[in-house]
Image (cartoon, rainbow, N blue to C red; front, side, top):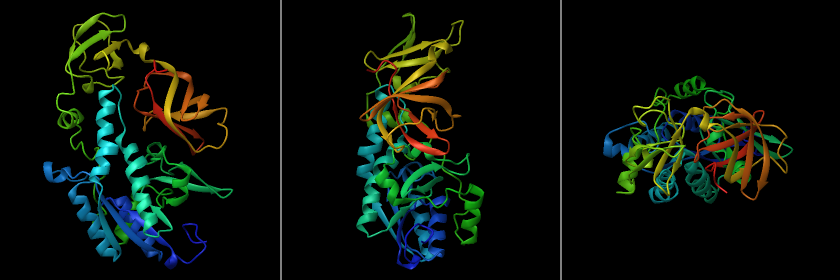
Length: 367
């Protein structure tokens, strides 16, 4: 068996590498090429804000396509740029806007992995006759009893399993994650070893189509006039002020609400139907039951009696149990109340290092 798990020589194993133009995917392409695999690099043209705003460093900017092409030329591998702008807009950007307008807080990187990258691009890799597709994600693919499992990356600071909760079993069987056992310093050292000019390229920190973090401006551009004003209301029903659109608020937010009140107030929920931002004391945020939709489950027939869950990518895992699961919905019960449960975010479940699956958090009053 070769390092990718195929019973044939590396030279007879074709691998499509999703090349974003960053250090991680470039190092993957270089490493697999050095091991003797037939490597084909594919870069997706998703949304080129780089030309519009002159900002470098996001995964789908024009500069990144140039960097990916330059890496491929250095390695001497085939490289293709595919225009997925229409698919990206439909599956990711429009969902981003609609989620904010509904009063929830989206994670577009998950939607991108779920749709464009691990669906459309993966299908393209199959059509090219690839044996597998490799990415630069910091997660580990572990095969047990002939079945692939998704585990946390070895470096807890870089682990990206939270963002891959929607990966299906079929996709996981085809995917490979060569960096899962490494940390970023080791990856950069690899890129330097292989003579890649992007070895010191900074990591992207922004959502690719929201280059400055100003997501409200992006929403206004894509849906002019959609952000309607409304009231800021206390959980006891008292009207405290006005707002210029619920898209400017997220559950748990404290700053920028109302002035002249004695107690610290937080956004408790967003009522899109009535255009209300409902605020209250911190204790009003506490939740024990978390209801999920669009569940993806990789954990077998039954869930372990005790789970560890994350409801934010950087959150310390919380003890929980799954009390209901039917079709693509579930109810997760936390062992201790948590004040950071936000609709639109993901609740991702673990059994030790293994990622079992997850779903999108729905409002607490959802049926």
